[in-house]
Length: 109
Length: 114
Image (cartoon, rainbow over all chains, first blue to last red; front, top):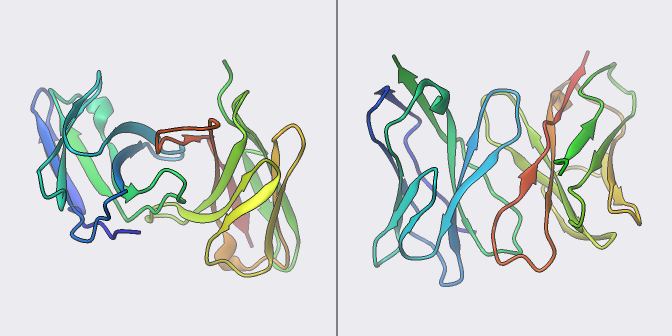
């Protein structure tokens, strides 16, 4: 499974757009890129998944360049409730999920 | 629809004891995975079961074992508990024939070993 690298922490203010970039230089052809969100003392929650280009849902957008060696999770107009740890994962659908240490996002009022 | 449920929510055990954690997947989901999350780290994969068979095992000692029942619920057993086993144990289920990498996590069981 491809190893991922993401910032340990990020700070933002309410209403701002937050972009969290993840590097995955060794991503394999079959690998998907998936992002999870986790609040303290809760299980992770699926946010978004993509293979290439851009994916958007009601929560976030995922931007993936042509070489797929990185990806960016974009959270529009964050609120205090978006304070959480965000994990970037790469792998194929039948693989176990491999979590790194994630990015701790702190949103301030 | 009910999400993934886990029991108990909290548990305190003594070193050397045995513990059993339980998980009920979302209705219709046949795959169950277990993860261990130590404070400050991401979840670490322990086991995955599909249709009652072990499909994957993480880098955990043989003290950890699991099984899946005909109704797709699952148990995680840990023998000879160590202080280092203190963690949040997460169960996740995923639908059959899923084209997505999405797993649905339960709230976890907080295990404290003293």
